[in-house]
Image 1 (cartoon, rainbow, N blue to C red):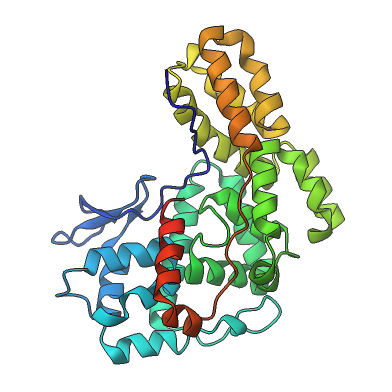
Image 2 (cartoon, helix red, strand yellow):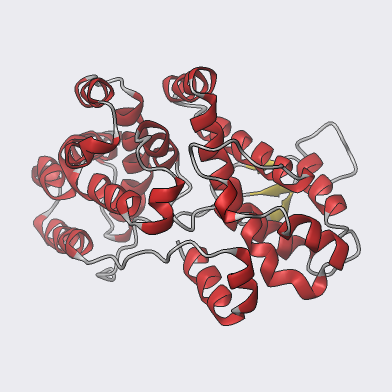
Length: 329
């Protein structure tokens, strides 16, 4: 029987490997994520040029780490980067300059490239859900300051303070505008929101109503085609096949996964999984249910507080721990 430990919140992003060419350049390779998102070489090559990594043995490792965990990880590589290159980025990396209400501070060439990659990854992830992509671009047009704050946050910190790179995490950040950088810096509201929604389903958002306009919340909860519903369903559609496979539960008649995902989206893991109880042999259903109960009830430790780069750079042990924690998500 499968292990009882189920990590359904794990996010496989920006794990870079060499793949076949996807650009018009015939002599270069591609970087690909484990989520099957191809990253064209022009971004990778430009990052390499900005950081002057072309002949560095750690080139792939550094770029992969940046794309996974944001510009903050440069502090880990200070000893292998040219001092002028490093100081140009770190001197511009100021935690106090990226509050949601302030104008964004100077953007370096590296940060522009990371933001370009993040935006490209969002678009690719929404390929099968155009409604979600339309929502993202609508908000970009109507509330560009907030959109840029979320994009910048992702480029700076990766998944460090949001637990996930998924489109669901993006949609939640865009919708719950009251959870800004100051809130992330000092509180664990977003992680609590994430844990609640990904365990209890869509209506758990009601517990965080103070962070979203009332009309927006009603629209997201009551419209079956709302961006939030679709993004949450995307999340469960990705997690459920892996979970069922671990417990050797086939996708009977090719619709068990969809049925389970739709119900879990509305009702959360425990109530939602009951909808497919009659379609799974008890000998497999009971271990699955127990694993889900353990997963849902497991306490999640509070995420680390945002640290200034000067503090991180001066505390290498803490940096290593932070990197290890985020790479396991």
